[in-house]
Length: 248
Ligand code: PXP
Image (cartoon, rainbow, N blue to C red; front, side, top):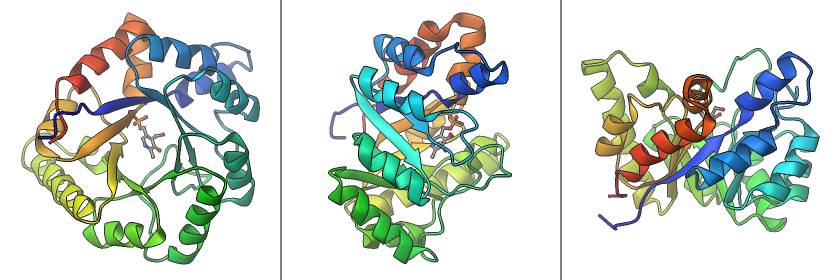
């Protein structure tokens, strides 16, 4: 145990999804970001998609202005997105796969297959002054070793299969895959982030089982809970859960 607490970064894409559903100017993702930070979040995550289905370019400008903690810009290797990310200069850039027909990000990057473009993109982001670059991958040791070879500083472990697993043996199997992947990433000298599908029910098992995770990115569960209890309370509840565990 190194004593530090896992950081909670909140993905506010779904606030923009709600706004766009009515083509209104509210709810404002930047206002949500401010409230998340005031309620215990250590930073904010957004994904600027090529189809702009939720976060818009003007949101990126506002988020850069208002976020006081860590700002994580999720993007694909698409040229336009990389240029916007470089101009924004977030604290962290996280590269993710993107398919137009998907409802949400469905799996991690195939870093082994796309090593060249990913390495080039990592280099470009770093040259633009973004020191922290993460690659989002499934908990597969070979993919994680490939992340190290791209020059990225961090890996974000895809927790979606764990989140979707049935409670019991299946869930235990998936959490063990994540724990093994985290050990490999640690041996590779990568900083370890995690996210996708983490929620109020599965977080405790995840945090007790998976070592070295210094940052989690959680969105849907928090925004969904905010419908019933308000965003501030939903964030505070999740922050309490996340801060209840030390990084081991
Ligand atoms: N990390 C990545 C790379 C993602 O694409 C997402 C979903 O946008 C998340 C974390 C957060 O997932 P969720 O909204 O299920 O908490």
